[in-house]
Image (cartoon, rainbow, N blue to C red):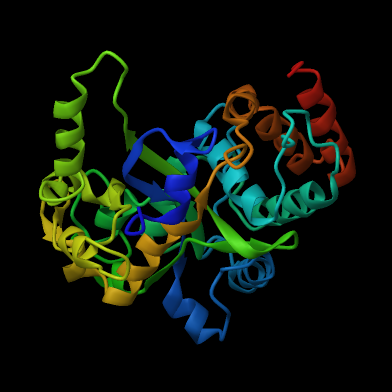
Length: 336
């Protein structure tokens, strides 16, 4: 498994054994105006500190918002952003033994960042739709999005046009955009990335030998066809045939993306951007993975407690510290 991204393999471990084969995945991206960052001599948003400085420097509404944070509590998008940023600051709501984490040190850091994000965002109930629209319109300095935005930035989808100029098919915005996958925070200097990974598993009642051959084919000779189903959402977790080889990444980068028009990612973005995007999967993570607590972590995600309490905080109903304490108390009330 040396040719596979390390953390997607780790997510497939149970009792010390690999129980399924990672086939593809994606990581959340901080999508940012690299041209404006360079113009203002700002560091790329790969850390909490850099994000805070940049959003405050570039916030100039209504012409430009420093960020477009998720605030609509019934949208799963908001919990995705929260989990992404919490991994970066080293906070997990669940302990290794399955109990609720009562240490709010890193949670407070997360809440302070989120409060700053909202203060530098438009008002209202915001979710994935507004963040994409404002970025494509050239009115957002930073958003957090899935890689599904990659083809839209390249002007390949009529239902999500680039409106930064009179030409909805322009690649101007894509060329002015940078991407950060790994973010570091006060409690996690190495950084982390939110990953969504798909796996190929073989059930106990399957024709094992035939299934094994099919899995081998998918992640080798058939890998390009497999990834071509939706390249912008299927990053290769196997970069090549062996450690250090990147031949499968090259195949993926040459696959056509888009809806109304087609073009390979390598025609839209430089190689360094493609390398950085794929590299995020190597450290992709989710709450509870390392300790086998995905079931409890999923319960916490689905409860959307953090979304609701953070909204109460950003609406001024709670202080940061009160919000942290309320999150812990309500997580404990789930009875995990």
